Image (cartoon, rainbow, N blue to C red; front, side, top):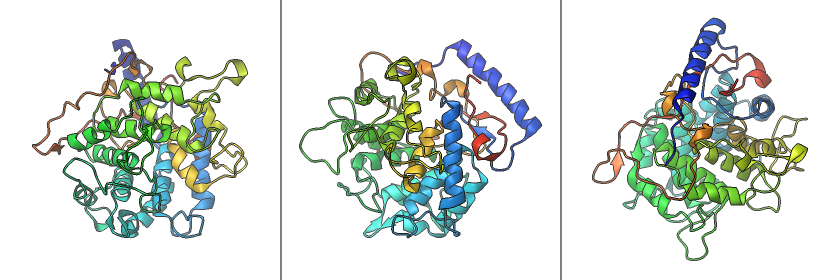
Amino acid sequence: MLRQPAPAKRRRLGALLVVAVVAALTLGPAPGAVADTRPTLAPDELLSVASQAAGWLAGTQLAPDGSLANQLGRPDPVSTASTVLAMRAAGLVSEADAPTRWLEQHVEALARDGQGDSATGLALAILVAHTQGLPVETFGGQDLLARLTALRNPDGHYGPASSAFGSYDPFGDVAIRQSLVLSALGAAGRTDAAAADWLERRQCPDGGWALQQGDVPGPCTASPHTTGYALQGLSAVGREVPRRALRALSRLQRPDGGFGQLYPDSDALATAAALQGLIAAGVDPNTDRWRKGAGGDAATPFTAMLRFSMNQSGGFSLLKSGAPDAGVTAQVTIAAAGQRLPLLAPGAEPDPAGDTAGSPSAEPSGDGTSAGSGLTTGSDGFSSGLLLSGGAVALAAIGGYSLGRRRRPSD
């Protein structure tokens, strides 16, 4: 059971809200900055790097039409959607408009694959529309939510039974697809008990979720990448975070503080996904539990992200010694900014006392698995009831890519 912040902590956060609102009204947001954010636990240095990375995408990587190209030079709708989320997470509001317009004009490129509608693409489109404060029922002239829910199978799974790496199911993982769908449903104010149950049933005996292309027999071994997405999806629809999943991530953490998926060393994508999962679970990644090494060599998942930053360009690389990659940068900047999916919608101000994300006191101890969402559902397990999203705080952000940053609760 996740613990709520102590009353004293709620009072401190309430005081921060008052100060932040006064500052926002006095100073106002500077161009390119955001004035409505969640608190973040990301270190200041990493927040600056996240803003720089988003600025690198905006200033040097986007095509004139607002799209982000793939390695073949063709517009990549998935990376373009990730770019919008990255920019908003890092506080670049106006810069996110051009890629959003491209997605609205080419919504079918994201929403469909070669055989029909794509649950992954529709989920990403919903997350973009929500983050930009645009109605998901009319984004690009399409009712994204209706099209997504039409892909729901009787067992709660969205999309086909299997998955493969490719441009239209880009993560090649049925559990990640399901997790993104849950994040999108949560962003749209929906929950789906059967969909969350489906994902919970695929939790491995070791506590995490495996990278799998379908329900195939064989070993089920936790992947930090898949587990991070699963925690975000379950949290988005109000499910409690399974404690065993946090212990699985703790075991998977590398000596350098990061996480790895397909390489001997940590990589940026796995580290970012695990970080977002921890944040969604209400865990503080700065605590000793997530700190590897000692002294000057000590590293947390946050500081591990710094090692993938290419300061000379502003982008992130997949590996520490790699070249900056626009697609990787678009995916990992959310974590570098200390945020998770779904991002906060513009102007949303939920009760901060009810937001466990980013709260050090929210991390559970002991054993146990997830309980139900506690939300009313219909006979088919689907509910249109509104959900409370994460906590918001109105903060004044002062100018530029490197200074348009999230403020930490301790600031």
